[in-house]
Amino acid sequence: MKYNKLTIDSEFKFEAGGTLDHLELVYHTSPRERRPDDKVVWICHALTGNSDPEDWWPQMVGDGKLFDPGKYFIVCVNMLCSPYGSTGPTSINPATGKPYMLDFPKTTIRDIVSANILVRKHLGIETIDLMVGPSIGGFQTLEWVIMEPEVVKKAVFLATATRVNPYMTAFNESQRLAILSDPTFLEQKDLDGGKAGLKCARSIALISYRTYDGYNITQEEKETDTLFADRAASYQRYQGDKLVNRFDAYSYWYLTYSLDSMNVGRGRGGVEAALARIKASCLMISIDSDVLFPPSHGKATVAALRWASYRELSSRFGHDGFLIENDQLSSILRPLIESV
Image (tube, rainbow, N blue to C red):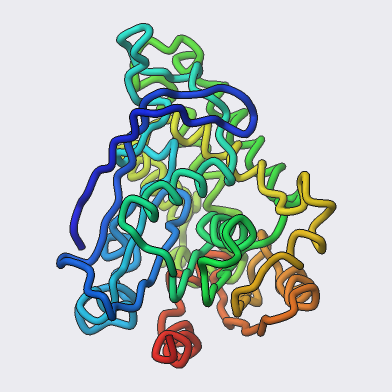
C-alpha cells in the first residue's frame, strides 16, 4: 500500500464545537494510479490501527489476498486523533507552538467521517463500490452510508453497532480513569505523559475484547505446581507495553470519547429514521461471543434496514474474532467483493 498525506488549509468545524484552520490527513492507497474501470474498496480502520491495512489486517489485505490492492483500488484513511499521522492532540497547535494535547477539540465519529470525505473528494472518487469497517471502523461505515447515501454501493458493518452501549461506555470510562490515575497525564509536559495509565487502560480494554474461553485457551498455566498464576498477568503487561511503545495517552483518550459519540440517530429523529436514509446494500457481521457488540444488536440493525443481510462468525475469542477468524470471514466476504 502507498503512503499519502493530504493537507487542508481551510476551516474544519467539529461537531461538538471548535474549528481548525489546518488539517493533515494520512492515508494509504493501492500502490498505482487509479484506473477508470477500477472498483474502489474503502477500508475504515479499527481503534489502534492505522491507514495501512496490510499492517494490521495482513491475512485479509495484500497481494493475492481477499482485498488485493492490485485487483481493486483500496483506500484507508488514518482517523483524526490517531497518532499515525493525521491531525490530533499530538499535532502542533500553531497558537502555542506546542502539541494540543488536551486543548484539541473533542472529536466525534461524524468528524472522522467528514475528514475521510475530504480525502474521497481529493482523489476524485464519486462512487465507493465496497466499504468495510470493523469495530470503530464499522462506526465510521455506518455513519458514512447515512451521510453520503448516494456514494457507497455496498457496505459491510463488522463487529459494530449503530449506537455505543452503556457496557462499552463503562469500559471506556474505566480506561480514562486509569489514565487519569497517572499524574503525568494532566501535567501535559510532553507526549510521554500518562504512559503508565495508558498501559493499565490497554489491560482493561483487552478483557472486553476477549472472553473467558479465549483467555483459558491461550493463557493457561503450564506448570502443575504453580504457586502464583502469572501467565495471563504477564500477557496483560506485555500487551500494555506494546501499545505504550506505539501509541500515546492523549490520542487514546480522545479516541475513547469518539467511541462514546457513536449514535447514528442523533439529530436525525432516532436510529431507525437514520437507517432509513441508507441506500447501500448492507451486510452486518456479528461475532457470537462478542460482549461489546452482541449478535442481538446486529440482528436488530438488520431488521431496521431495507437492503441488508446478516451473517455471524463463530469464535471463542470475542470481539477480537474479526482479527482471528480469517477463514470464516473470507468465505463470507469473497462472494460480495467478487460481485462489485
